[in-house]
Image (cartoon, rainbow, N blue to C red; front, side):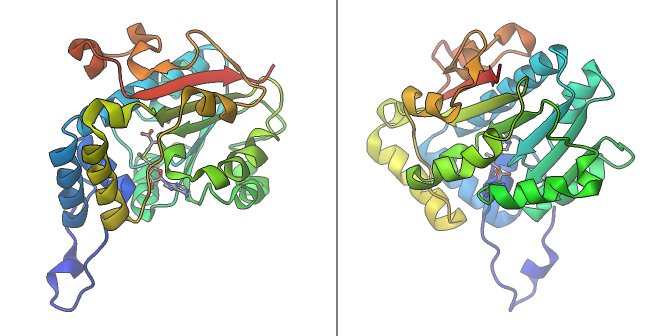
Length: 277
Ligand SMILES: C[S@@+](CC[C@H](N)C(=O)[O-])C[C@H]1O[C@@H](n2cnc3c(N)ncnc32)[C@H](O)[C@@H]1O
């Protein structure tokens, strides 16, 4: 992607965004120079950053495949990101073409790119939205148009993949509970999250420097959470096997190999899939 405005002398320098930095880390093309610079700065501190992103995407694909196979018919992907290979609708509709998917992201680049690849796919849409305003998301879902994609009277899969580490502890319950708590029995949640052992693995000061890149260049703070804290996000939902584990250990046979399997060290991100019974 080229940024025409950045070539004019008085154009404001665009900030990096998490969505476009992540796209760059995954080898995508939907990013600007500011995103590439910020992502390269992160890679200079934590060279594993690209493997972490890939490991997360592979987990997401395996989780979606598992849930589609289990008969889930509608997926709400909050903080869905810029489309990449093996998006939620592609994995899910390969199992059942009738599955419906709503992508929600705060980054307009992610929304435009998603709607481009969804063109003609009447069961899927992408909308711009802020998942830290769950009441607004629920309000939009009640809209008659979107209600044909996500019907909250039926079981829904809600995905929070690699997004909740952007939310401070004092806000996390208010962000997640309003949507989680309206999901009917039979619904499922997928969460992947950066683990608390990341600073130990790469060194506190190195990880702090990488986190500073996100703070200064993308106006985002990253939080590390313990397994107990991540488990609490699921509330009464019951995890399916193998529970909350490093992402490379979650049903690895269902996708191409996770980079951490080859590295023989666990993924620094944790993930789980859970159902409301
Ligand atoms: C690291 S990416 C993860 C993308 C995707 N969920 C995945 O696992 O591959 C984080 C995404 O969350 C989006 N995001 C961050 N804050 C958000 C918010 N408040 N509301 C909606 N999306 C948000 C970013 O724009 C970005 O696309």
